[in-house]
Length: 170
Image (cartoon, rainbow, N blue to C red; front, side):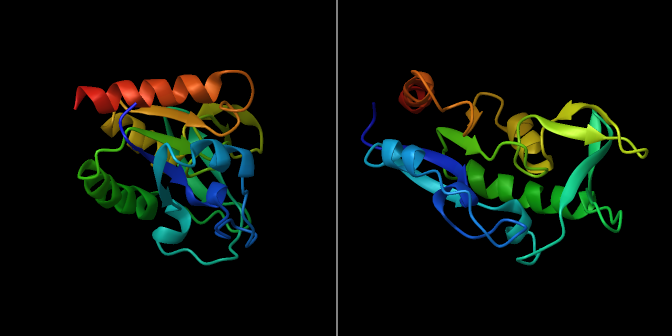
């Protein structure tokens, strides 16, 4: 492996209290495993694009091919806000040469496979969160996973080896 991998990570997984409820989703085991082998680049799309802590819950709605991110209580559509912020952030991230990204599972902004709801309140499928989807499209060779997929067995080791392969090819 190169001296240190550069890995983007959902900020809530690092212990930052940025979630909608003002809490974190600190994953101590994940952080301990990454310590010494990776420089982490924490990102919270929801806070970084200007939303408050705490904030109302959001979900993905509409079509699975092009979901919208919507505040559950008010049906306020924040898709344009997230898409605009994400485009700027992706331009910044291109300069960092990230070797991989670890997303927060089930997040409407950062999840890789998030439920998509129709207007009647039924789940119609799944799609990536708004930021995660745009990131994956922009960095099609990037190694991505959510924290749940990295738990257990050799999954984290395999993720890091794949990130190392990407770094070596630069």
